[in-house]
Image 1 (cartoon, rainbow, N blue to C red):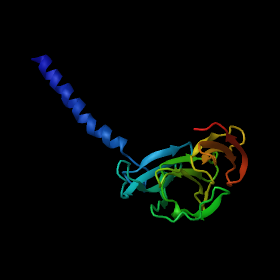
Image 2: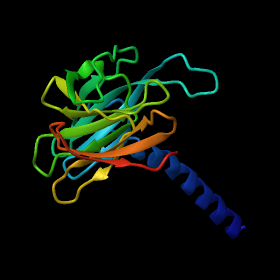
Image 3: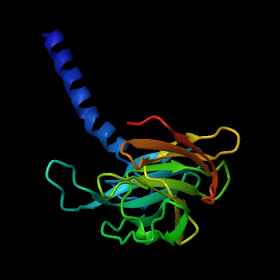
Image 4: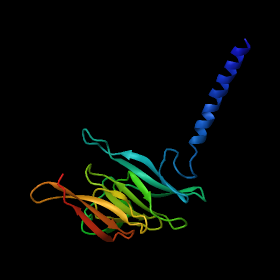
Length: 203
């Protein structure tokens, strides 16, 4: 009898604690939507995406999401909306020759974010997204500016150089006689191309 009562008490205690733990885990920074999810963070900032809408999908491929981008400074615990993607933005300004400065509200898609700024510096981000099911567009965003820098690349971030903090980006192109090759390039945070290396191997 005592064993049964003890078992019942333990079950009630465990079940009673579960909702509290779940609610605690859902606590968000002030002003950030409760449905937002963290995509990048460091000791100074958290970066969130929040799904706003889903565009018409192509058969057999996932739909492209419209998302809002939020940042929260950890010391202040107050979120700020940076932008909402524009799924049908006209990307006629895009160039593979050089970086282009564009309005922040012309970014068509975001699925990834990387914090570029060092400790105690103003927030700077690299965000990436694919709006045509093929090419990844990469944008450098200064949270204090209304514009963004679109890098002349189409396959996204590979990594960052340890000392200089250069962005190591990948792109692809095609040989005239057929076949595809990759290009690895380094850019600074202003979008200037510092170096470029062509991978000769055909795909």
